[in-house]
Length: 54
Image (cartoon, rainbow, N blue to C red):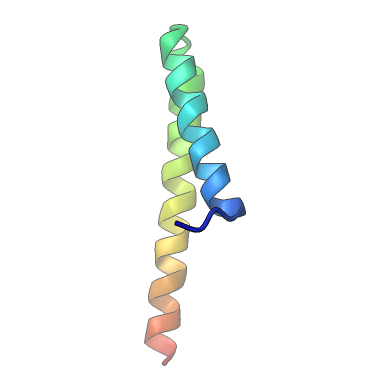
């Protein structure tokens, strides 16, 4: 597995979300996981547009 900046960002956000759940800071965990889902869904739509152009 290749570790680039995107992989490290995702790993860091997941770890941050788990730690914030552990310390009972659910608002921070919701923000982290919501941002992660938004970031990943943006990436999927970008890939779909590239496939349609070809």
